[in-house]
Length: 137
Image 1 (cartoon, rainbow, N blue to C red):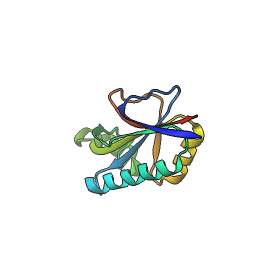
Image 2: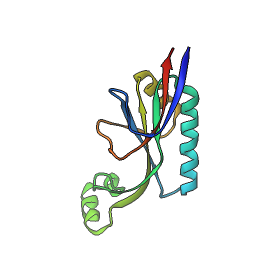
Image 3: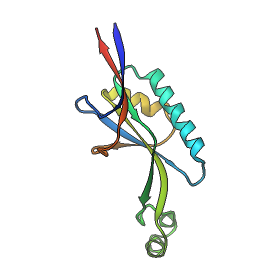
């Protein structure tokens, strides 16, 4: 028999976590749409993941884009370098962080969510998680 314990506003406490970042652009969508999509993602994860996992709240972040990330780079790399000099090159995004104790749970998470996720080797230390710990009795 297993028991679920929920730890709120905590750091990752289990060894060797698999941490992933989900990023939503705010260019074509509203804040409320992004937050609804993130809540839907966490609910689906709660229903499907059987091991210990956690998620953060959505964070609003302002990121600086390099010219390789720019839309102009797909058309012409030299145009992108020139555009990087004269443009703002910042982008508002909402980011959420998920952590998992088991690699099979990561695979399940990747397969069930339609948004791109990025594996992180290092993650921000100020992020607090809601962790769903599963213990066996």
